[in-house]
Amino acid sequence: MSAGHTGVTALADTDPVITCETPQDECGVRDVLDRLGDKWSVYVLVELTPGVRRFKELQRAIPGGISQRMLTLTVRRLERDGMVKRTVYPTVPPQVEYELTELGRSFTHPVKALADWSIAHRPDIAASRAAYDVAHPDSAAR
Picture 1 (cartoon, rainbow, N blue to C red):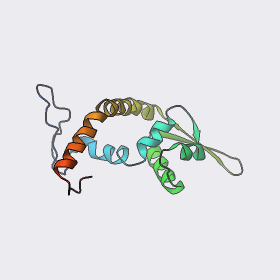
Picture 2 (tube, rainbow, N blue to C red; picture 1 turned 30 degrees about the vertical axis):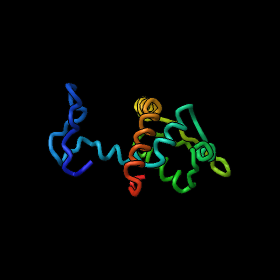
Picture 3 (cartoon, rainbow, N blue to C red; picture 1 turned 90 degrees about the vertical axis):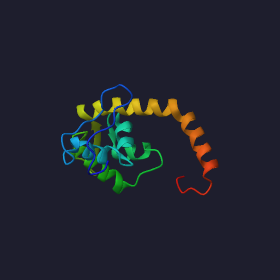
């Protein structure tokens, strides 16, 4: 969203999805989307949905692979935001487990809705991409 974003245009005859009081306010949307819209956060939250995972289990479960450093940064940020709880056990080496907090669990509902929408519209998006690519063969939008 741009710095001057003040709302989301209403769809047909429905109420606006987001309305901000001032352009500077941004309703906190940018801050949340910056965190939860990054490449790894949603993957981490989805993989923690079934329950507690140790660090290496979590790392292996993430599609496409994630480096140890990036996973560490991602879970620390999610912990800071109150989405993930980190528990360290005093063993040698230390055993660390991660689980969703109540706030983190509440985020799984919109993620499921987004995933359902993506699955339902995948053929439409693929057809649109194919038509666009034919009409714009030199486009860098791929």
